[in-house]
Image (cartoon, rainbow, N blue to C red):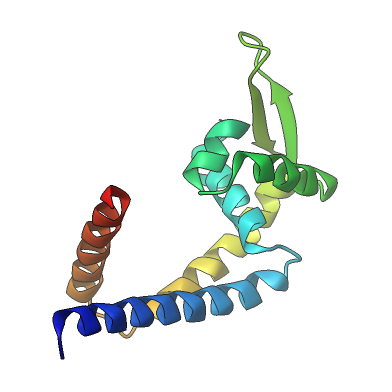
Length: 144
């Protein structure tokens, strides 16, 4: 197989694996009434504490125009609230409410277990090698 064809096959394998993982986790999160983006925001706040809304969008890789919508939806569900920064009025923080905190305490362990089950077919060394290889490809892709 030529190098280019092999690379195309690798792209397809990565893409299909990503879709399968996304489908499995999406189905898991739907039982809690959350989509993956909402869960990503909740998970980020759960592990990092309150954050400026602009930072959340950059860290979980969603457009700045979309983060406001996602925060609005999480606010409507009672999981997040906004807090103005006392030092800079241009900055607004997203904060987990006690309801959001309790939700994440309840669902995060099951979500983590689901991820562990997906990756259980790989050894720790295989996971490390995969992460290293995908990081290299990702960094190279940003240069192109």
